[in-house]
Length: 270
Ligand SMILES: [Zn+2]
Picture: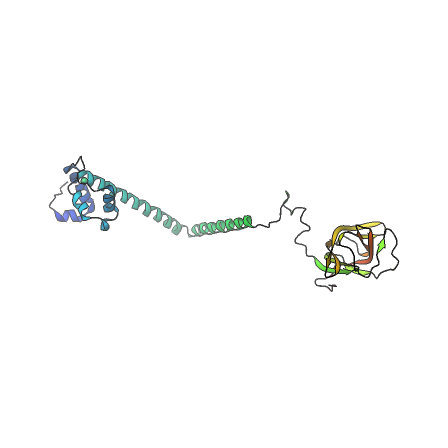
């Protein structure tokens, strides 16, 4: 220790020397056990962390109060440790990403994927109309049909049919209508003044029923219509009777011919 107080150049040379000197001298030379005239802790903190914004009187006080100076030295050390930690963690990250550019890019991409995935999951949760799933993950049986199946609109006009009661055979043979053997959004037009209400639809061949469904008839623009989704893909091509029977016993019989599946946008009655 060859340092002297009046050697200005030595003091300026290095902050470290100044601090060494300060610790050994200023921190002991001016005991102030009652802390008379001491500035608040915040003023010391401000001097250490924001020297430009602090009061010059605080600096003057430090030169004549050892407890305050010791506290100031502690704050400086704290600041230095903080800065070193920040610098080293940042240099570690940037050094790592420089050394492993591919890994760094992958990490970034992973973070992006996770964020996007999370956003999608959250959007799925918020979606109010998700179809209910059963335990096998398929749409629940209450869903009418597989949503991926396309139902072609198809109309059958039964308005010219004579109504038959009970098991009476139909007197007038109606013209056989061709029906594609596929999934249809079928609209049946019932004879004028047919009642609304529930009807049973059946596709029969002799005594056999190959397909049946219950549906409701509704009045629409003066016509009584039944709209059902049908799947005739499993019905063998051939001639059948389409029977439509109301709950009151009125029966309509329409001879149909289930044909091969229509090509896309094939001609269809509307
Ligand atoms: Zn003081």
